[in-house]
Amino acid sequence: MHATLPLMQVTDFPAIHRGSLATLQVNLGYKCNQSCVHCHVNAGPHRTEQMEHETVEAVLAFIETARVRTLDLTGGAPELNPYFRDLVVQAKRLGAHVMDRCNLTILEQPGQTDLACFLARNDIEVIASMPCYSEDNVDRQRGKGVFDSSIRGLRALNKLGYGQLGSSLLLNLVYNPQGAVLPPAQPALERDYRENLRRHYGIEFNQLYVLTNMPIQRFGSMLISKGEFEHYLALLKSAYQPQNLEHVMCRTLLSVDWQGYVYDCDFNQMLGLPLPRTHGKRTHLRELTDVDLTGNAIAVRDHCYGCTAGQGSSCAGALL
Ligand code: SF4
Ligand code: SF4
Image (cartoon, rainbow, N blue to C red; front, side, top):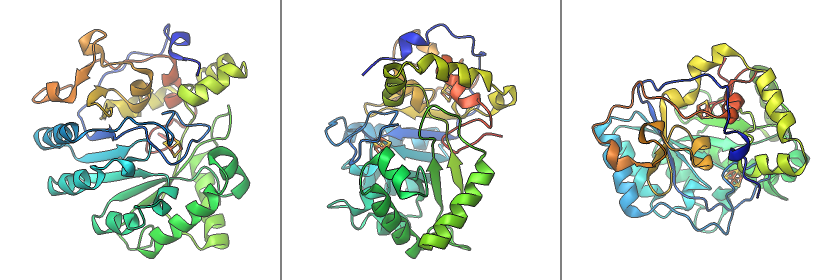
């Protein structure tokens, strides 16, 4: 795989600084039952990196001392980590809102058929990847049979109350473009998704999050292979909207990797870009007990233009 960081070291992205912490985003490991083309984590069935028990304990200790309001669990498929369910239950006990970034097909994997019930019972928000409402597009991007399995997963979640009017169980879908283009406007695409998924499959959901593809890891490497990397970066820069800068997610989010090291966001984690406060050395979550990062500089490079292009992009969709 081609490395993209060396191509983005010199940047003119504006300096930004952290606000107060609201969300701890924790990557529980790179193992996944899928190997999607656009995956910025390079996850797959053969990855073995998984967060261990003592790191999970460090995450819980941090949630308690830093009074973290939201725990955002990601991977790979976070549910494949053996401590996933313990972490969820304990974090809820500490009063955190918990989000599970779920690829939907995991709900049908051996040993996971009770997962949907577990999520509902614990009032976990589900953020589900659904890159299109058309079977062809989804299977091309995520693998054969993924669309049908995803539809079955969404139906199972709906049956439990997820995405239904008047229910507290939140089901949000995530869209990202198929190639080196900016995503369409979020409100219009959300209307299309709602209409199509309701009409053809009887599926309900709360919100659609529209994400911009980041020029890193598998997607970035694919751009380099096709000779499109510079062109895509130029596209992101040409669409820069300064008003997005106030709302980029790294201002209120801290990202934790499977070993417990922290980064300004998931993308910086994947690039191995540590918090600037340690001058190139990684910071472990344990070192941040009683440390207030408010006002700290954020590590920016050219990939940050992916967050500020057009309507903006974050783990919760468009910014504007
Ligand atoms: S489901 Fe998500 S984590 Fe797994 S390979 Fe696809 S994009 Fe990566
Ligand atoms: S890529 Fe990360 S550090 Fe850069 S603006 Fe986006 S969230 Fe912030």
